[in-house]
Picture 1 (cartoon, rainbow, N blue to C red):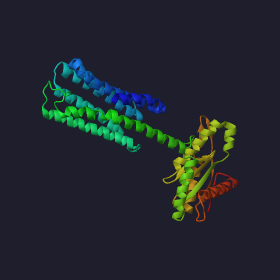
Picture 2: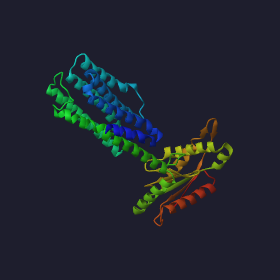
Picture 3: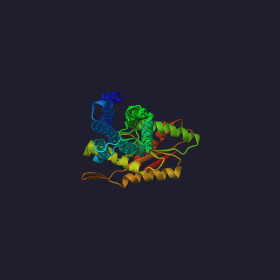
Picture 4: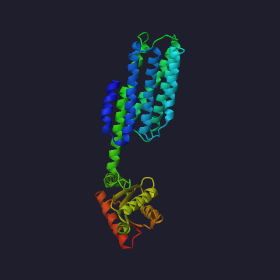
Length: 374
């Protein structure tokens, strides 16, 4: 099952986005290494004991290291050669107590300690992402690591209390623990691989949702997201009798920037204005790009005076930070039209239309100003 999972995952990883492929390959390699270690255990009667236990344990430890490395890649952690230290130390310890001072009990304790440390590293990475990755697949994989770690600790304690002799074998049927070990050991590379695939799928789904709802140039919410959230906030505002304000923002003389300096500079200017609007927006205020040089900010739970003050805050945030691109420095201003939700508004589009009228008034009155209508 481990080999099958690793092989199928190897065929699938090419369909993943390029950014996820390194982590997927590392996980696949980890699964195949653990499977190879298990195959070496199967061949115990045909290999010298020292070679068999050293190679088998080394491959399993290297596979667990690959899992740790894969999760670090998945979440953008830097690579580190130090991750290999537990594997090297554990393999050396197993070899010593197999070839020079044969002692099954000590080998079990060494292998268990290394397995626990490597799985703890993977679990720590998964746990640290709880604040930004709410995917159920991440929690399932964390639970799998925790469960296998718990079993590993119980297994080590069992053999320690059992007082195994130096010639004791963990590969026969003399103990129920010998039978349970391969069953539980297969959970991580088999079920865990499925959970990791689902993590990749969930990451892709979130990226597509983000792309569908985000303006590609500025990173702000796009028109689609604005329309959806605006309709929801409009319905809520009508239910509580107002408080919703829409600010429609237009960059003054933007066509002149494109005509004189080119569209590349114009795109940089759009990102500059978007960044100024986003940085000056406060909690509960949602900035979005409507299209072209027009932006929108939704404000909730504000009255007339607060709305005008917010409009001035947004206007000054752009005016007080000149736009620079290399040696080029340009003063940029915006005109803002604001509309407050009324009881007779039929839908969110009514608010947009009145804000557009207010914006026209701001332009006609000389630009770089805020106009508010009811």
